[in-house]
Image 1 (cartoon, rainbow, N blue to C red):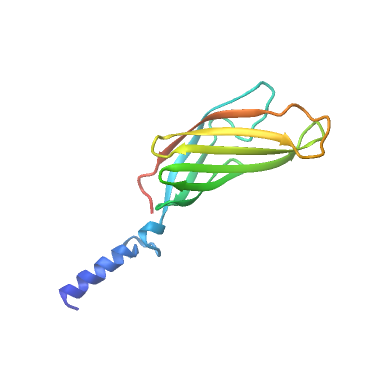
Image 2: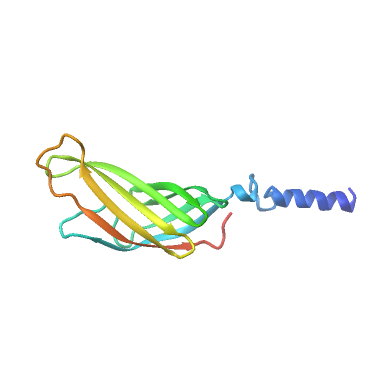
Amino acid sequence: MNLRALVSLLALSLLLGMSTGCSSPPWKQTCTAEMKIKRVNARRGCYLDVTKGSKGTLEWACGGGRARVTMGEHTYTGTIKDDRVELSATTEYEFRDSCRWRSDQYITGSLKSGKLDFRYTEEPLPGQHRCARACKGKGRVTVKESKDDS
């Protein structure tokens, strides 16, 4: 094999990510960041699905697109596009008031800022009566991009 062909082959393998053992081009590789709930505020007596200190690893397509993070028992899914993070999770549960509830949780903000907003809302499912007062919560999530993305 001549030098020109070898250089072309090397350039092609780098483009396709073969030198790192990846089977996909770099723009389809997965990036990661560590996330941690730093603060959660809700009125006294409210139970939220996450607590201060909850951690997870955010994963997304490096070029932007689908994203997900699991914190505790809950997986938040959504997108990262142009530095904008938009993740959500929904749960349903039976509460001690005998009502069935739905919670919606959101993590949003700028990835590069290192700080994301957390928001929690809940409401009884339609047709429920004499349910407890709904809770709302908000908080702060820190995010630190990993240096070793592959």
